[in-house]
Amino acid sequence: MNQKREMPENIRKMFEQRKLASNNSSNAPVQPVAEQIKPSSPDAEEIKGEVKTEQKEQISQNNDLVDNTKNDITQDLNNEVVNDQPIEQPKQDKDKKAKIAKPKKEKIVKEKKQKEQKEKKKLSKKAKTIITISAIAFVLIIAVIVLVIMLIPKVEKMNAPKLKVYTLSNQVMFYVDENENADYYEFYIQKSGDTAKRIPSQSNVIYISSMLNNPNDPKSLGEYTIWARYGSKNEKAVSDISNKEKVTYTKQLDKINDATLNLETNELTFSRVNNAISYRIYYGAGENEFITQVNPTSSSIDVITVNLANKLKAGNYNLMIQAIASTGENSYYTNSELSKSIEFIYKTKLEPIKTATFKKSTSNIKITLDKNKTNTSKFKIIINFSTASSPLTVEKEFDSIADSQVLDLSQILSKYSKTASEIASISVIAVGSGYIEDSTAISATIND
Image 1 (tube, one colour):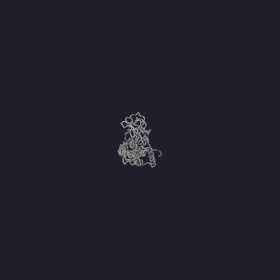
Image 2: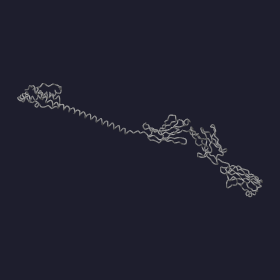
Image 3: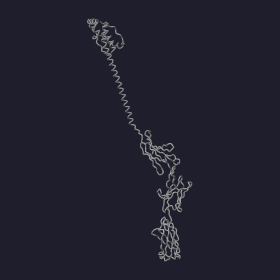
Image 4: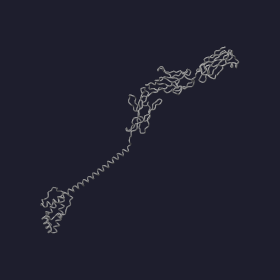
């Protein structure tokens, strides 16, 4: 009873079939031994009868044997090759096995496909997770880039400035509006035929003299083109150039500082100025308020002398001199400033009368004159007597100025107890006033 028995043939075949099924699908359920043993074959019926006649102890041993064998076969199934050929069976058993194996095979294929799909689903889920993470990372990177771009100040190109030109009395100034975004200002100057010169400046105002290498050099004079733009340390912000302006750079003649006036001779003297073609002597602030314009005959004259006699009306003046430049097409000089003022008191003298005639019989004296040159209605008559008495001076003022005036001296002579026959000579003087001096005396002709 304790001796180990051989496994019945039908049971062994059944385990071989299960082994074959296990190789096709490890998930197929294992059926109980009693269900797989069917009384379809004579051998099975014989064995069944034999089993019935065995004692319960033998059945128990067989069951233990089946359990042990099942564990051994399950372990062997993992190591055996799928293509192992089963032991030949009777034809009837093969047909039944084929019928049973076909649905099992389909089931195995279906389960295999489901398993592959499941594995694919698992892989797809993993890939989906990776893609999701990558997408999130990409979005975060884009968001960071956009945020950085938004935080970085945008660099915009500055608008081009408008260049303005102001011509002063002795200078030309260029101006552009201030720009708080500009780090500096750029001015450009170009002479015809030369390359442009760039002048950076911290100021929005510049004078043409500061744009030239040597503004005092006569070669610097001429026509120029000027323009400007706003400068920046960031090249993208630098503006376009402004409008271009054409200007003429000129030089002002030197100012006269050494003028002197001789009050006795009325002569004005001063030094010659280079490149001046003439000189004007002004007596007022107006452009046309000048006494005379002097045109020296030679540029080699070092000292200019101007006689002011009879060039002014009597009066008090502040004289100023200006050097005059040429107005020719190729001339780039301008008139000088006015010199320092020179105070000048100019007095004129009345022209003497033309004639004076005294007639003793009537005691009348007749005076003729040029009222334009002897512009006065007041006269002084000096009478000298033949006796030792002092001369008699009579002043007479007429109501108006006339070319001919007649004066009766009889009443004057009576007043001083004198007669016409006592008169030895008579002289007449035209009387002036203020800055007009008296004329010289003219002797009258005495007739009986």
